[in-house]
Image 1 (cartoon, protein in one colour):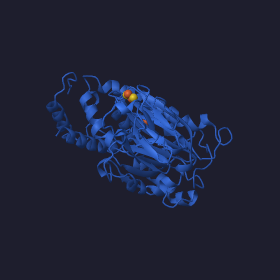
Image 2 (cartoon, protein in one colour; image 1 turned 90 degrees about the horizontal axis):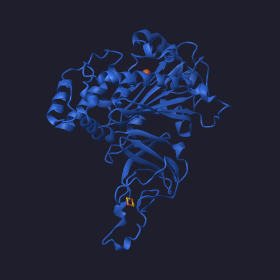
Image 3 (spheres, protein in one colour; image 1 turned 180 degrees about the vertical axis):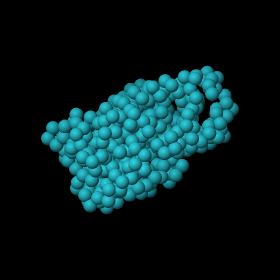
Image 4 (cartoon, protein in one colour; image 1 turned 90 degrees about the vertical axis):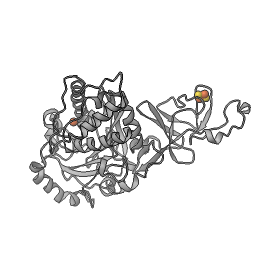
Length: 417
Ligand code: FES
Ligand SMILES: [Fe+2]
């Protein structure tokens, strides 16, 4: 169905959602990738109510440190305030709405609005506005920067624009054993890079949620990672890896599996999952030659030939090897523009060129992300054609896409009712 995006009416969008719900197992109609109104609803009803990775604590270690996190057309200041608290604040002046903070990151006791000079402390509270004596009955306590919910967990800072959101911690605690083994709170960001893709955010996300494309699109990844095969084929490899994992890594619970994502999440947008899957024999980690790339992370004591695959909220993922961790996050920047951010973590004391080589460390996931960028862009071109017809998801490989779509449609349905 072609949605007339110039003149969208609510009834036609409701019909499109209902039609899609009656076709479980079939990919989304083009209207879901093309409609500005659907995009606005997705931001309001899904992304602005979910837990999303915003920054790592090492990016703002000292009081006064801040970093911006942008989503859609919005900007949020992640601030380490003078009292030592981590805060998340809307980057919107309470006078007439200008962006207050103009630098991507920095250190400052205050944020001074560049428009008329209102000054905010780094906890978001308003100091004295200029010439405030002329305002009648002005209570500056009412004009602090608006807050966003924020939670730090093992050094990962998550935000939720819905300040009433239920805590993310009970869900994260369910994967504390495997996640804790990497000691991310003391890890170091070796590198981070944003790949901007001309595609709707759901195409990027769906692509991450399935490995049907891995064999045909990711030659380096497929050489070393077994996820490209069906679970029946990889079962012996995974069984052998899980049998040795605890002993070799020294981590109790390293193989614990959990899947509480989307409709099964403990709270809205508080998705968590973990599974450990096998690398092929000869691969200690996700490297070109299979050899280790960096010192072991956290409490890891050895290479079991496995990698920990995590989901943390609806759009954040990690693939954690014994010697480095790779975080992936998908953020919409417009109807047809998505930022895929990749963050490479190493052990906190690891030094570049002494303990690891940055090019070797980042090679696999840089190359793999470029491949994903290429295929997702082409996917976008196809689904935006008036001749596109939705097709069947693969029952096993694309099961997670179907779970996402089912949840997504329910969220949308609510927003249109
Ligand atoms: S808009 Fe910020 S001081 Fe006027
Ligand atoms: Fe991929």
